[in-house]
Image (cartoon, rainbow, N blue to C red; front, side, top):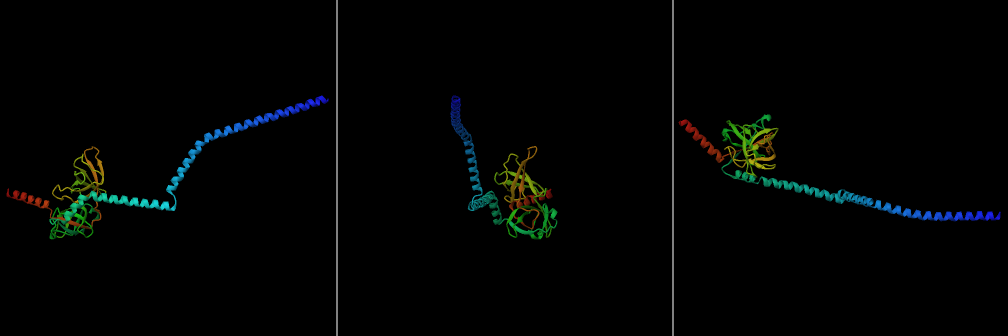
Length: 297
């Protein structure tokens, strides 16, 4: 019996030892697996973490630039205001440059002793027809004649904003004016940038329209137009306006333009009457000579 008890005791001891050994082995393998898993996770997550950090840093930097501190926002607003100011100044200078020829001709016309400007006021009360024709308070007694040129006056001065039209009928104390918007009053113009010619022949919905004589001619937005002097009515160099749109007709045989005029044809109160142009004198002499020849025959 004693032998059997010792044998059982040894067996229990051996089993205990084996369990301890197995436990130690499993424990050591678990650490290895754990380390391997950690390394694998780090290898996979490191690029993701790097990308996430890069994106978050960039976002924060942009937010700082956009919002920033109060001082930063004030500086941004100042720079934006300065930029707007520079843009407006650039546009103004470009406008002056584009109108250089017009301004020169205008100054020469005003200072030229051959040209006489007469101030007049609009007395037409029919607002509906004002854009195409109206009546002024000067007539034969004041020396007004048919085909005298009408310009929109700047206030009560001797300066003008642009071409309005011409005198078509003259009475003792009043005269009838047809504007360039009247379809019966075509106006020949010249593009001051390209030197190409065209004709204004249409007015619809407060828009002045015309076309270039040469379909291949250059014309683009902001080009300055003034009277060409052709036709013997309007002298060369009177400012008409700027091109605001260029388009081809459906058959591609005509280059159409839209003109932005400085004249507000629905609110004309004061005008200037231009007289004494040499072209008019020549035309009048030729007309008189033709009439005399007809009478003599």
